[in-house]
Image (cartoon, rainbow, N blue to C red; front, side, top):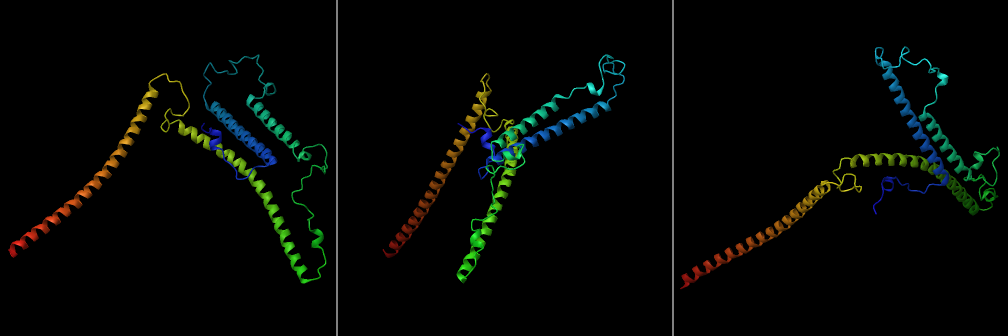
Length: 277
């Protein structure tokens, strides 16, 4: 079974995302999509208002002017109801926030959204420990040169571990950005694939989906495909035959040259025999 569009164009990260990174990345993607949708709706509303103000509808009897409008309908701003799109946008944003909060409650960062101010000890996840494992060894009194060399090597090892831990945090932050980038890239690739499929030239039935055969269109397309395949096979046969003919022509030329050389040698030998006789 062929892969679907979701799995064929979705960007894959080199590392497996942690649960917290997935929660934050998903919330950021939803927030960005809602913000873009809100900007598009506000832009369309502003353009429609400009178009209404620019038209000259004073003489049109079908436009609700103050003379033609119903006086019983209230026109105050307080009586206006909010638009459905704004309510839906607020609802979607609230649902996204609730989902992120619910997922954070199930993780080790529930202290960030709780009502208590102190961080519980059992929920703390210390990524970079403040006290190293070799703290007592690092403060020991040196007695020999060998101990000084070992202590210097231990200091270098501790610094290297701190650098690796800091790099790990940077990679986790990069994974959040990579997740958002892969989401945007997935949508762009899906749009490009849908745009190419509308041309109907690269596939038999245009978009490649199963359709009900109610006309001769399918059989015409099959005829075109079969003719293309037959033409390709014929070209391959012609190329093979041409190679065979070239080899035969070269062999014939070689045999002709050998025959001419043998004939000339026979004529020269015959002339010598006549001179001797």
